[in-house]
Image (cartoon, rainbow, N blue to C red; front, side, top):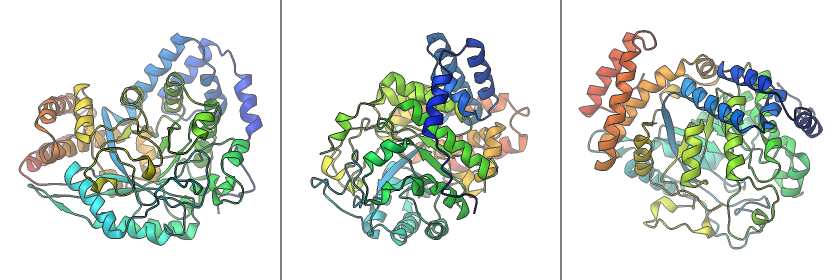
Length: 482
């Protein structure tokens, strides 16, 4: 056991003291911290407090420029895509901000059967071309650990025949309620990818207010220590996040940093595989969302993304279709590494031939409903490659191994090659002619860059494999990776 739940590592008073103490930071101090981030070193809370207090617009531009440079150094010129699959909207909790809360009588409750899970997966893998999912469950007896494990296994079983080979989901990440070590071992055995749980808000008083007494979610510490239990269960890729709009955004960024440092300290330097920062979005019959005084403006949203990128330079950063196309494009340019597309969040929505959003079966309303093909095309126009790679997880590059490679800037070598291979495969199997035409230039650009940097950056053996696998993919072979 690596922790004691009586030792709460989030000190509200201390966070506010740090934020107030570091007001009006000097240019020299800010630039020193930026240089530390560029060396891919995790920042300390007082350094994050300094960045959050920057007022000078010129310094913010320097911070944003550094965020883009860090993203390129660690993750190269690529964006990873996924899709959410909501399996159940039954929930015992009564969170003020959530459309799934138990007292929302306007929500149409449903849980997918295993056959329905497979049907949704067939569309996501067979018609759209996704290779990774984040599977989402409400907290209820219906969607217990056995159901979660069964759905994970069912998703992996789906293979969809294509003209050349077949496609399938190869990475199933899970967003679910905090679990015991015993239950986490069950979903580990089922093949879970990353385990994602958001604290929602790190502010104790606000947490208690929006998660009423008498609900499972009211227990702040049970949620706070869920990643400790995940590591104990053998799950070494974990994902944290905060729901921005519940409390002051600067406090939440500090909370995320304390959470990151706690994990690094207790688990041999392994921090969060990804960090998410969703903003409150409209949801049916959920007036709290309009009443909160902590709404985050677009400007502040881009600022908090910048600070997180600098604060935890190695982590993956997820911006989702909650946001508008305009904001999502800016976030991806700024340093985010993952996003979703062709997104539907209604229970069973992928199987319906209807692209209209239905508030009565959704947790919230989406801001960007672009298809995967549209997103790939839009990124290609900017010279950015979309990656469908899941190789690292199957090669054992997880936990401490991936953290070490990310910090040293070495993972980008594998990722760039695998991005090209999976991009080629997706273009041949799923892309529209318009998207293919634009994307060919991106592939050419990426291959030329690799050749320019061989052998200094890219080992000749890996480059030879890229050339061999690329030719095989064009001829119809699938799922080749390094």
